[in-house]
Length: 385
Image 1 (tube, rainbow, N blue to C red):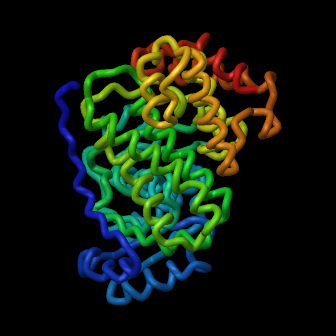
Image 2 (cartoon, rainbow, N blue to C red):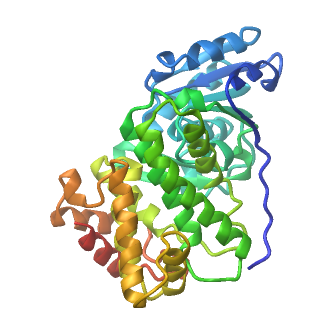
Image 3 (spheres, rainbow, N blue to C red):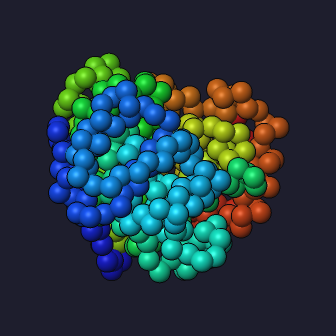
């Protein structure tokens, strides 16, 4: 295990009724912009609770942030921030709203086009507006990390950046606010969190026993609680466990000091940008094929995963590996997320544009060992059809 600097300043307020804490969490005298998505927060009570908690603050609103937040929409938010002298942002929604708010927080302070954040790998981000988050959809972990993904519709690009300047100051997590989520969003959230863990765990052994067992515990929790949340939407304990697991899956802790992959995500981003698939849908498609194509490079960890997560401990090694991958696919399907491109109306003819996009974005040496070349990506995608 390598040396590492685990840095995470986000304060988490977890549990029923925690939205009321916004009155103290948001600095007095702030000019606050609340950013949200399509309006579901008006139906589940979150909007009214946030407004009540911030009754003593100057509060403006910006709605309409998409499930894959777009540069075009977020630039309108940046214009509003500048016009109204906003000095604090509040993201109210799921990972897309929080990701978009991170871009707004950093982009509002730049003199150049904020898209340069991606072109310069966030080297030009020297500060950001402070912001907090009220999470309504457990999935991405964005409420407790410093990364964000934004789509530019005009060029069909989906790009990511990370900067210590865009950690949320706080995150409010109330599991009761997830009770009314559509089953599709719940299933997507389960898959998203699962693959986040896998990207940091499924590499090669480095004797990082704490991170390994922590990751395996998160995977087991998702396997137990994912179906439970779908079967009993108002089971508080199930929702609480899912929400906390999704946060811990990508707050930096399980990835500290260990190799990380992220090739599944990079290929998935191109599928979303080109064909509009939900982020989690792309992950469910790509991960099983990636594991099959890369089984030799990941053999030791795949056998560990098979034993510790799926209790597959006896028999031929290759058979155990294949059984573990098959169980992973079956789990994704069990929470309503298809694992083949054909399940989304895509076929082999849709593979070539993805490869062209990967090449255009210089994503030709991916993975923990940079072994996911364009040819490997081709094999993965063709196996995913």
